Image 1 (cartoon, helix red, strand yellow):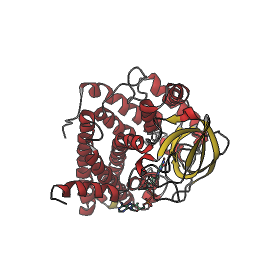
Image 2: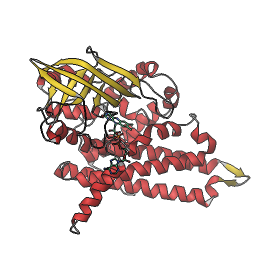
Image 3: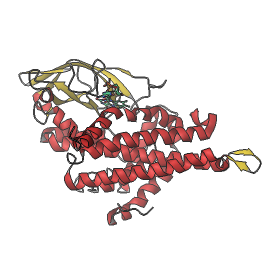
Image 4: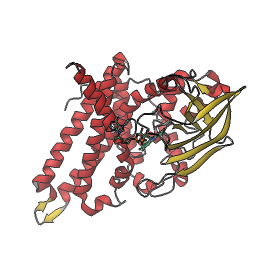
Length: 398
Ligand SMILES: Cc1cc2nc3c(=O)[nH]c(=O)nc-3n(C[C@H](O)[C@H](O)[C@H](O)COP(=O)(O)OP(=O)(O)OC[C@H]3O[C@@H](n4cnc5c(N)ncnc54)[C@H](O)[C@@H]3O)c2cc1C
């Protein structure tokens, strides 16, 4: 299929990313996943240095900041390439939640916070996390939260309980959403505050086991408690009471990044499925790929992946041209559509591999465990479907 979203710049840089991911990451990633994060960190640090030296570092940053100053359409296509490896986004410093925090801090953090935290984050010297969801409240309606941040002289005192704080283990700071203005309207109650994780009272309770695996370091989701944590008033990001406004701005582009990463995973799983179908012999002269059911899975997956890419890049184009707010409904549409394509493609690839598909001898089981959350985080399917349906029904007078 002709790539109608290709640009001259992308044509120049794209092959280098494919080459890096294929040669530097594919051969080692399965082996690395089977080891502890702390053992892998030095190896990944070396790979990150190689990526930097090759001029492939954080391409979404502006050129002055050491990136390539790409549009959303261009970065989306690189994000797909990175997504074909489980380590791709991390090695190029494009991984969530850091990329979202970087974009957010660029827009709203003070010069002092940028110097102290954003610079080392962009440079890959530290990691960060984002703490919004709380176990006691429905995260799909994030205006409901109990974490409080009280201004006390030159300081802010935080108390609360968060969970699913992705990559908190080993992160240097957390951007915490907390209620600062209890009596304000629901969308003006919360603010964002930067909390260093080594502050007294910042407690990482546990890495939450997910389908049998608690993970560690970057590949983990933490439960945390904030017990009378004190930070300077200057750690407030943006204006007081504008936490939700900023969170929405953080999520729009973030959903493009996720969707394109999922398409990368789909492509890799699709490739594995086809490889297996073409070679797994059922009897002499007859392989899995001769069976119509498997052919259907291959054909349906191909069509769904291609449709997803076109939808996501067309949404990215709208964001580039009109901003994330104007593309709100398209963003909702791709979020639930592509997450479900990912589930279907992974499931078909696993089924095609038979018992091997559920072992940890291939990447499929890692993705199956780690990506089931795609239908839940950044807004569950049902919330996005409701947004789309409501926007459509408006045209019918409802
Ligand atoms: C892998 C992963 C990583 C995450 N990382 C982070 C992170 O770094 N930081 C952070 O703050 N949070 C994070 N989260 C949390 C995430 O944002 C929440 O899980 C999400 O907002 C949903 O909230 P909830 O889990 O409380 O589900 P609930 O709000 O309790 O919803 C449960 C289910 O109810 C249904 N539902 C909800 N609302 C509606 C509706 N309006 N109409 C119909 N059905 C509905 C949906 O099926 C939904 O799945 C992460 C979650 C996952 C799974």
